[in-house]
Image (cartoon, rainbow, N blue to C red; front, side, top):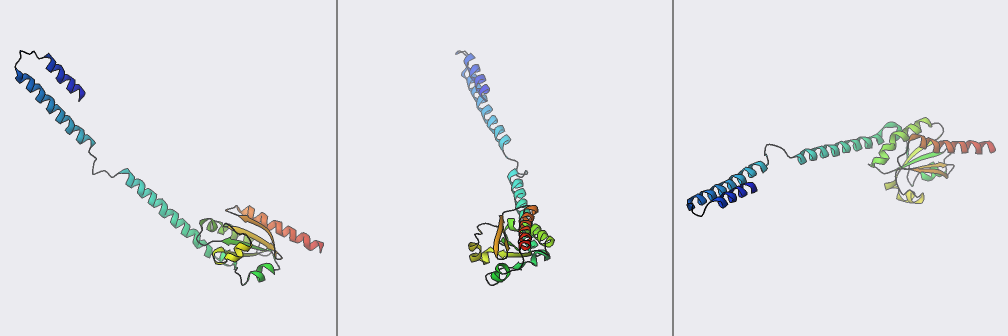
Length: 202
């Protein structure tokens, strides 16, 4: 557009003062027409295509699909809490805690959890596998922290999942967080070894 202006001004500068003024008017009219046509062309090029869907809609759809998939995964994990191996674990509360834990004859492994917590649900298959493996030597139990706040406070359960191991009424160890199965195994094996040693000494 600037080149058109320079071209027009150059032509105007080259017009002799003796030439008819109609030539100047024609050059000015041509310049104005060029400006108008240029504006129209630029407007057409910058106008969005209504037939094309914006990219942000596609990205938004992808994000929504990801969230939906995550929600389904969490729901699936939550349902794991009902599968037989874990459902068979004793549900601890203030009424039975003393009898099952403090006065129990076997070591007891307690899964302290919060319902619908993804980290807690993620550990369910591992805890169930550990319980199945040691079902003859250890008692597996679960404690809903939300329903048993006093018990959680008494044993300093500040985050979930937390795993507590009691032996003859004494707290022998704890683990917190999402952990591999071998870490859970090590906690139990330590208690079993300690119990075996104490039995030999007696």
